[in-house]
Length: 120
Image (cartoon, rainbow, N blue to C red; front, side):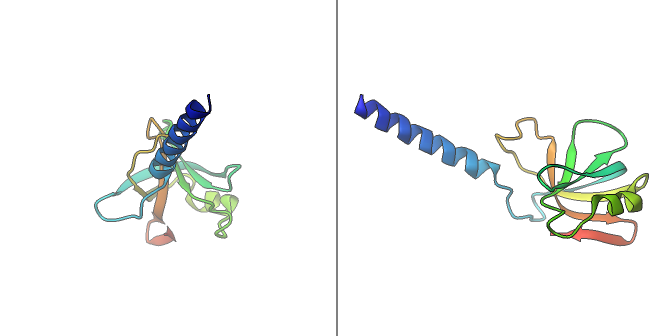
């Protein structure tokens, strides 16, 4: 029984490392960064203090500045500035087992017109 417990723990540990490794967002490079122009209907703060940009075209994709509130961003102020406008959103294109349908986009750059709002 002890041998099975040790094997089970080892497998669980390796599986945990696998998920953590694939869940981490890699450093942005020209090869893994994508940019989209999105009409923004709303900017909001989630429970993780991420600043989320919601597309006016609907869909389930969520674009977010990781821990944006902790970086000094205010969702209400950003909402007043970009709601109803086209915004350029650049994100790292990667796969994660925690986001199996690839609908969460970690932003590395946000701009609106000539205004740079955020750059990682």
